Image 1 (spheres, rainbow, N blue to C red):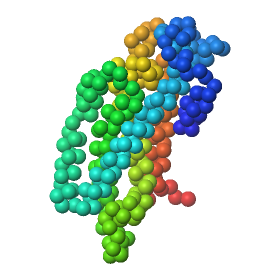
Image 2: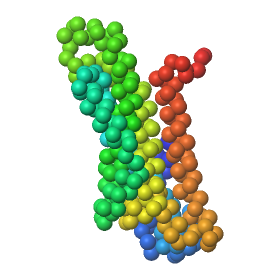
Image 3: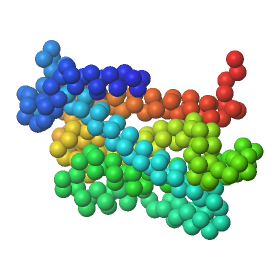
Image 4: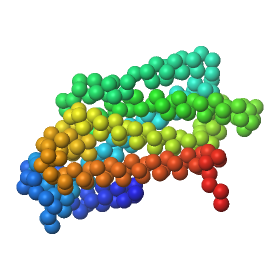
Length: 263
């Protein structure tokens, strides 16, 4: 499912002129035709170009925010659990306090302040500011178990330093879990970006999937019966989230022996 979306967003950019995703580039409110396969919205955007560009921008936002959040969360979780003591207490306190902050409220406040000139890249960095919290707590919990393993004790006796043990000994064993945390963080980041953009707090000049939803609500696509404007972003988002869910389930089975299928 994800490969189909990747091909749609990647190869589609080679076939379709994505510049027609801009307003007034096509006749407004036109249903699908041989020339405009997905139809045209009320602002004169070629919807197939909007979907291609929007899928690319939305997935890129999730990848960047998820990667930054997972890397930062992993760094904090590893350091806190491995060194323990005051280091663990301070980092754990920071994680717990940040988790009490309502994520949506914080993101809405930041987006509304920097809304002028906001781009999808800026949106990704705003979401990444809170994307590290859950991975940090989860990775710390896993690290607390791993640090007492025999191979870690052998590495310490062999004279390896703490950061070499974390990177060379522990991280490879937690790689499936780290990948699962990244996929979950990516899905959360995409959901957060769509939520903010649907409220009009996203990049006004970029045709992301969230902004497409905002514009179709603004121009009352439901009341006007413009089904060709409503269905494509909904179907793409359903495919994206279901695909990410299946990947996460597979990674959970890989990292947790209890979930692995027999045979």
